[in-house]
Structures are given as C-alpha cells and as structure tokens.
Image 1 (tube, rainbow, N blue to C red):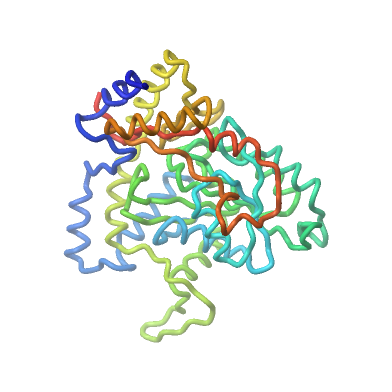
Image 2: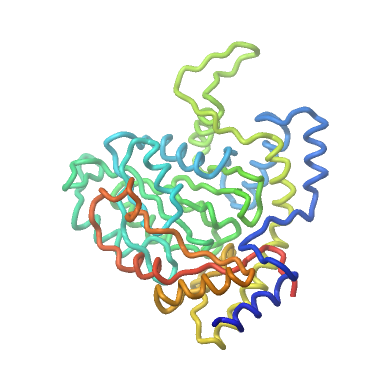
Length: 380
C-alpha cells in the first residue's frame, strides 16, 4: 500500500534513507566557524552574535532582535518581560509542539487552549473570540477569566509547520481584550502574511534555529519586537542582567543566561545567507508534491490566499486515524521518514487539568496529519 506515494517521494531525493528534514551546509559555514575559533570568541560575545541580530532585522523587518540559546528560551523570556507570572493565564492552541506550553508553565502561568482552524492548523480567531465572550470580562483595563478569577495576560498563537495562521484577526481580537500577543513563529522563518513577515504582528515574536529548521545554528533562537525599549530590556535580561561596568559584576534584577554563543551565531549567519535559495528549493518541492497528490486524491496542505508559507514541513491530511497509521508504517518501513503531528497538549498529563474548551478541529487534525520528507535541497 502507498507504493506509488513512496516511489514519488524517493524520486526527489538521493537513493537510500530519506530523513524528514536534514540540515544542509552549502555556504560559508566552515569559513565563519573557523573565523570564530581563530578569534577565540566562541561564547556569548563576538561579532557574529551582533551580525545575526542585524541580519534578522533585515529579514523580518523587526526593529529589535535579541539572540537566544533556543526558541523555548526566547518564548519564555518574551512572556516574562511582558509580566506573565504565577496566577496568570495565557491562551494558546492545543495543536503545537510542547515547548510552546512549557514556556508558559515556566513563568508559573496556566495555559488555556482554544481550537485551531482546519485550513491553517493554527489558532482559530472564531474559537478565541467565542471563549473570550463567554468566559471573560474587562475590569480596570485587564482581561479577567470569570471562571477562575485570574488575569489572562497573553495569547500565544503558533504558525504550524510554517503555514501562517490568521494572525491579523487574532491580534485584533486580543487588542479589544487588552491581551498581549506573543507570536510563536518558531517554524515560520520565511513565511509572510501580505507584505509582513510572520513573528512581527504581535507585541513580540520568537523564532527557532533548531537542527531540523530551514536554517540552523544547531540550536538557537531569537526574540523580535518593534518596541526598541522592550528590546533593550530583553537583551539585558537574557544576558544575566549584568549592569554595564568595566570590571564589576553587578546584577540588580533577576536575569537569565539565555545567550546565543558566538560559535552558533557564526553558523546561523552563514545559513541565513542561503535562506532565499533554500526557500525557493522548498517551494519547488512543495509544488511538485501538490501536483502529484492531486492525482492521488490525497489532501496536501497549501498556503492560504494572501499568505506565503515557507513549507518547512510538507503536510498530508489523511482520511482517518487508521489510514494515518498504515501510511506511517508503510513509509517508515521503506526508508522514508514520515511523522504524525504532535499529540494534543490537552492529552499530556501536565496539561490535562486546564479549562475545558471544545477543540474538535484540533482533534480532527491530530488523527489525520502526517509530515513527509521536506529537506531543504531536494534533488529532482
């Protein structure tokens, strides 16, 4: 079963085992790494950290970029700097990678899950609005959950697999309720809504450069914002909140050691130079997949009108959970790595006791979604 699908996927890649998404190093990676080593500045201070932040400003259009050790740290510090803490609540989506919810828990806050849309796989504005209208009230400029009595401080939508969610509608709704939007753009470097890059719609946004992303530093992340003063605060807090001084170690507030090492920044600077090429090649692969799966009467996920996806992970929607299992077994048995979408956050022990909100779309997708090989340099 699925023999023709397996053969088609294999036709785009070299013979042998086909990973889901392998990193590709075809630019100045070795050159910049050698420069970094020769300089001896391999830790959190060095020219490549500064250059990375400048490069990301140019790519995203954000006014401030702060490098971090990974995307989870970026999300945690973004929530922290907005004042999210114990006894607060944060709205997010149940169909996401666990790091999204873990970062919320690190602040001491409680996640609340609203449903996703079937087309984008990201947070549903309709579900968000319905939850707020039914359960919340504004008092003294803050959004209170009438059931728990807690303040809802933030909302964290995520651009699933690089497909932009309805972020403009989400931000508009949150503005009415005085809720800050922290945009989880970990998977969407190179994705756009109109002429604006994902990650730049909310108060703050975050990106990840983990080993399986389109461009990678092995790890790494960053926070982006158009609030320059907030950006300065983020930089201060992520670098242990050390007060500037020629030699003294003075820390007057709680800081975090979330710094990106210069050696990782050297790698990501070289990778970012290749981003346009990588995005073009990924679109070529996605377009070929789309044409093929139309002939198979299988649903291949595509970008929504008015958006441009990076096609980080190419995505199929199968007819039911049984077909999903059969597909995963057949492909992986034949050397083609495929993976299901994440287990719903509401099914995990640490998130089962959250407020009960109906999430039929998330459940539907969780039963049917699989990702197929999406490596950034396909060979056709």
